[in-house]
Image 1 (cartoon, rainbow, N blue to C red):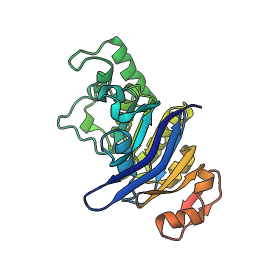
Image 2 (cartoon, rainbow, N blue to C red):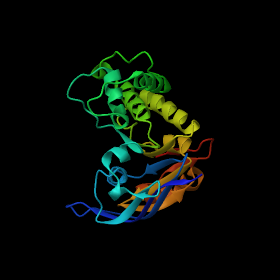
Image 3 (cartoon, rainbow, N blue to C red):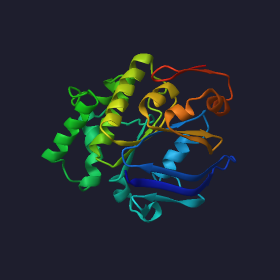
Image 4 (spheres, one colour):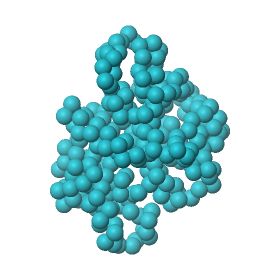
Length: 253
C-alpha cells in the first residue's frame, strides 16, 4: 500500500498552555487508524490540524506527497473530509439536501446537482442503511441516524480519506452498535479512515492500527493486539483495568 498522509515534527499550542507534539505519523491507503486516549489528550485537535482547520506552530503535513500549506481548500476537500458529532445545521434541511452539499467540491458553488450527484447521494445513503431517508428532515432523525447520515455525506464527497471524530460518543448501546456496523463496512471496503474513538472496544474490533495519545503526545502505536494490553492502557488512562483475551479482545474498567 502507498503512503497518502505524513505528519513530520508537528507542534501546536493553545493559549491555555496545552501543546500537541507529533514527531512522526503516517497513513497508508486502506488503513483504518484509530486514535484513542483520555479526554483532552489532543485527538480532535490533531484531526483538525490534519484537515488544515488549525495551523501548527511548526512541522509539515504531506497529503499525497504535497505540502498541505500549499494546497487550496477545494483541492483539500477533494482529498479528505471530516465527520464531526458537532454538526448542527440551523435549518431543518432534508437529509438528501445535506448530503448533496458534499458534492460542491466537484462542481461550482451555485451549480445545481446533476444525475450523477443524485446517484452518489443515494448510493451513500444505502451504504449506511438509510436508503429510505432521503426525504426525511434531519432533525427528525435519532442521534444514531443523524451520525449515519453524516457518514453518508462524507462518502458522497468521494474523498480518499475520511476523518471521524468520536461518532459513538453520547449514544445509547443500540445506536453505538449501528455506527460500529457502518464503520466495519467502511473498513471491509478498504476505505482509508482516521477516527478518534471514545469506545476502545469498538476501536479494537474495527481498526487495523491504533495510536494512543496522552497529554498531546503519542505514547504507543501499532496493531490492536499490540496496544490493547493492560500495561499500555493503564499508562494511557491512569486506571487499573483488565483485558479479556477473547476474539476480539474486550476491556473492562
